[in-house]
Length: 158
Image (cartoon, rainbow, N blue to C red; front, side):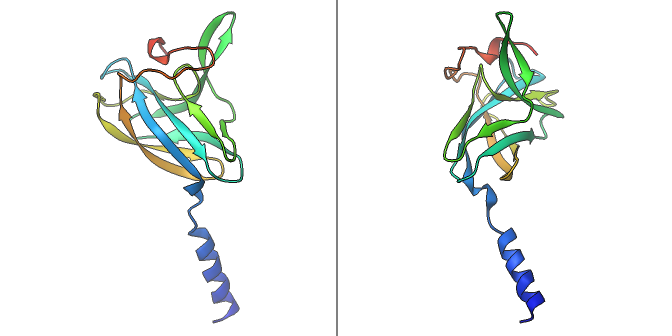
């Protein structure tokens, strides 16, 4: 083997390592006010089993042309949804909760009816792990987890 061939083989082996294996996604589900709603949100738990912090920086799916990372902030005693600047951190060895009343993946311009029980692919984009595809289930009956301020995304318009 030449040095060039050995180097190429080593680089190919390194690039084949599953970088995204450190990020695991638990309990992904989508909720909207109705099957025909044009907006909705996805919630889930992000687990980072790696030794480096990572950040969720975006998401994409064929079911909506515009998808943003959102959170709720308090302004003058009223909670409002706003886009998360810089992404959602997922600490090494830790997790990040995307839940109603807190951080979530916001879908705007949903292009098809999403009945309860339907499933669709969602690609989460991480700063270090890259793209991680998950299957999201539509579930309008799931009870919300507690958030920092106890809000419930299902009652808010966008």
